[in-house]
Image (cartoon, rainbow, N blue to C red; front, side):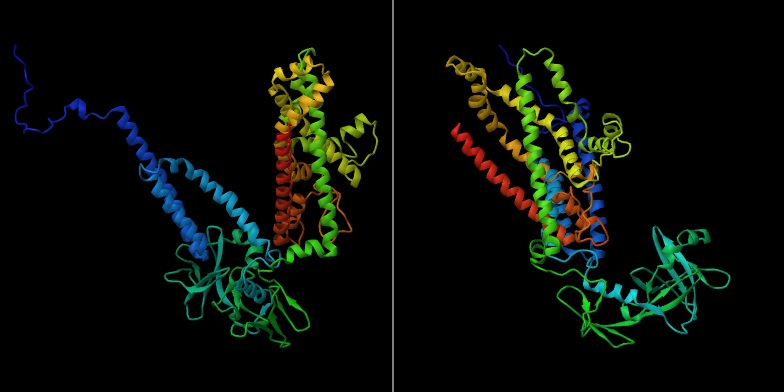
Length: 541
């Protein structure tokens, strides 16, 4: 018996793999998918890197070096993770970690830092910006200053001033950026510069449409804030303005040119004269615990704050207890199958929960309107009841609407908890002679509370910060006219934070951040106590 041995193809060296056939060289579907995935990955990384480079350049221009460093490290990490086939778990974790750092960690850290500063209206920026603003606000036309030909130019949304000097040199500047020479400007027949590379001339109709912005345009002459600025009133000429105050960098003082009064910086972030007169604006400084001290000790703020704090606890407590009681009763009644149509009733009960909370609050706002609301006009035969403008009725209305929105959720979790209780437990209790009430009180209710207590704590925390219902229904009103800060009868702590930060003309971001920290402390303490109690209750049952 003979055995046929595989022969080596002609012209193929021993031990070397024969050349692949045309079918083997043809890319397989798996290989094509791999190449397609690689191409998509390269394109996405290119887009991310391009956006990162743009952000890095912008941050470097603003000298935000710590954010520059964070973005640079993040960009390098993204490229390391996604440019290779390694680090597979990191490919799934990286997006979530990035969103966590941007939307949670950064916000918490920024809030914590701002709470210990005087950040707010009049203290929005650093000291150099405050000095520039003070000198700019006190500028006056320099007597006998020559009027120079000028043109208003634009680049995107930025408006600049193109000035032609008597020696025919051309300089360009814009708000916050001093004049700098321009090479190869575009001139008209009279030799006046009308455009510059990258900058287009603004037409007369454009000047008329942006008259307010152009009249407020202030172009610094040099980097020195004492050198003054150029301004235009008609868009075709510019005049020199100089501040009535002068800033001394060495002494760090501002002096009035006319009265020679000297203003010195204080620990509160303002320039003040010996008689207490202050210059505005100021700048951000570290104030330590001053914001917390003002909230707890200042009589003008402590009273409204304590009132809002008590109402917040009442609102959150009732918004948990009453919907839970209603939901528990309805879940107990509809849990059995003896009631005819119980599925229809369950569906109807869930309808309020199907509406978005903010939309339901807006609907109820219209229904509770004093003059033309459905409740007064139709249900109460035209009665004039101020549901949303009387302090106590507004609180009652807010509670009623929030209970109406919240009880279907409680019905849902109570139904689930009741159905999760083993039937053997209840049947054993009934065999031992327990009635329905005893089974509910001693068997079902303890087991149900053990299951839903964490949800009740979470619901309390949610209602403690329930901004939507308050803002959409009453806006926190009716306003308390005796309070020194903008606060209303139905304001919660979270809506008070919103008004401190964004409402009115005296916005106090630092104090709003301090109140946010107090909210966190209160909610965290209640959550810890509640979870410990629930754990102890679970051990007893």
